[in-house]
Every structure is written in structure tokens, then in C-alpha cells.
Amino acid sequence: MQQTMKKPQAVSQGDYQAFQQFLIDACGIVLGEGKEYLISSRLGGLMRHYDVPTLSHLLEQLRTGRNPRLKTAVVDAMTTNETYWFRDMPHFRLLQNRILPERLGRPGQRVRIWSAACSSGQEPYNISMIVQDFDKSNPGKGANNVEIVATDISNHVLEQARRGVYFGVAASRGLSPEQCDRYFHRKGDTLEVLPEIRRRVSFRGLNLTRGYELMGRFDVIFCRNVLIYFSNTQKQDILVRMSRILNPGGYLLLGSTESLSGYTDRFEMVSESGGIIYRLKNG
Ligand SMILES: C[S@@+](CC[C@H](N)C(=O)[O-])C[C@H]1O[C@@H](n2cnc3c(N)ncnc32)[C@H](O)[C@@H]1O
Image (spheres, rainbow, N blue to C red):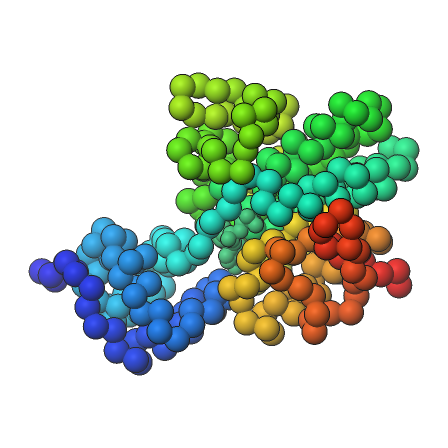
């Protein structure tokens, strides 16, 4: 019987490089040099669970592809899921004051918004909260025609997101007491997203490095704080493919430390209300 890995073991350079390549192929994430410690900190528990003693053995199992659940679990464990409520607030102000009035300005208009790396759900629920507020201050302007599609590669965070129940730091980070009362049911220490906020949002698994054919077209794409993990070639490929499924004049929102510069010229920059967003150019 194989001995279970009890403590971090030295990782050979060859195995580390093979693991870096596995991650790029599986999900686009580039694991930089000198990050060997992440192997034990993020994969240690999983390797014990699957009784895999070393990285070499793990790579061997991943190569055979006999256990797809192991591959999914490894990718899941290597994703960074940090998020919080109303992250980059200027984006939500721009959604409320510019994007929604513009996109809902046409009668009968359906507006589709994609939260493309939604993590545990804070981002798509925040979008829905803003739509709710917009509806209250602009009754009859069509906020009922807004659909929010939220995707992520990690099953683990998608499960949390679908539940819509938050506690501890996840329940408090970024929220004022007034927002807690307005958008959630409070049950003891937990906050449960109100049904009228949830019903606009649907969650599904999606790897951004694969095709978007089944996604349909969108008016707005939130792709925030995920491209930083990818190579420049991968970023460019994703951005160009996103531009192809945006409706004319549609908007792309990136994280506050990310930019389009050098990747595509299909967008014009809009800088307003302290935030920067990108609008698809005509033609
Ligand atoms: C740091 S979180 C960002 C969450 C949110 N967008 C925000 O700005 O707060 C990055 C998310 O990207 C997801 N992710 C990483 N690689 C991905 C891929 N190839 N396809 C889809 N999602 C991916 C991770 O699972 C993680 O939940």
C-alpha cells in the first residue's frame, strides 16, 4: 500500500514544469516560478484524500485521464477565488447610471449580462442588486428584462454561489448594515440573498479558455480579476472572443488593475464616475 503524503515533499523541477503545463492546458492559469509551496498548501489535502503520495504520482494519474474527478478537483484547488461585495464600486455606479439606462432605453429591450468568473456569487448578485435599485427608481423601464448569467470553472465556488447563503467574512466584507437589510434575509449569523435578487441570476460551469458558442450574445460582460492569472496570448484570445459575442455598443468590465492595452483595439475606453469600462466600437 502506498504511503500517504504527510508533509510537504521536495518537488523536482521536471515535475513542477509538467504541473505548470498541466494547469495551462486545463484552465489557462500560469503558475509562476518559485510557487512550489502552492503544491503542498493547495493540493496537500486533496492528495491525501485521493491517496496520492507525491506530485509525480499525481501527474501520472492526471496523464492517464482515468479519474476526471481528480482533474476537476486539482483545477478547483488551484484557482484563487477571492471576491467581496461591491468590489470596484465605480463599476456598479456606472452600471446603474450609464449602462442600464442606455441598454434599457429601447422598448421591449432584453438585456443580458455575463459575470464571467463569478466565484462565490458576490459579483452577479451585486449586479442583480443594482438592477433591483434601478427598477425601484425607474419603474416600467424594463428591469424585468435583465438576465444575468454567472459562470466559473470551480464547482466548489459555484455550489456556494447557487446557495446564496453567506456567513463570516463572506457575509460582511464590502457590505454596509443598510445593504444587509436591503438585499438579504438575516438568519442568525448568516445572510441569505433575497429571492427577488436571486431569480435574475443563473449559474453554470464554464472554462474561459474553451468555446463560448452556447452562451449566446451579451450586452455587458464582467470579466474582472481573472485575466491576471493567464498568459498574454490567452488573455488576448479571451478578449477577442468576448468582443465577438457582445451586442453592438456592448460593455466589457475588467478588474481595476487590468487593462485592454496591447490586447485588442475593438473597444473604446469610457472613464466616468471614478471607474473605467470598455465599450465595443461600431463596425
Ligand atoms: C479572483 S476571483 C474573481 C471573482 C470576481 N470576478 C471578482 O472580481 O471579485 C477569480 C475567479 O476566476 C475563476 N477562474 C480561474 N480560471 C478560470 C477559467 N479558466 N475559467 C473560468 N473561471 C476561471 C476562479 O475559479 C475564481 O473564482
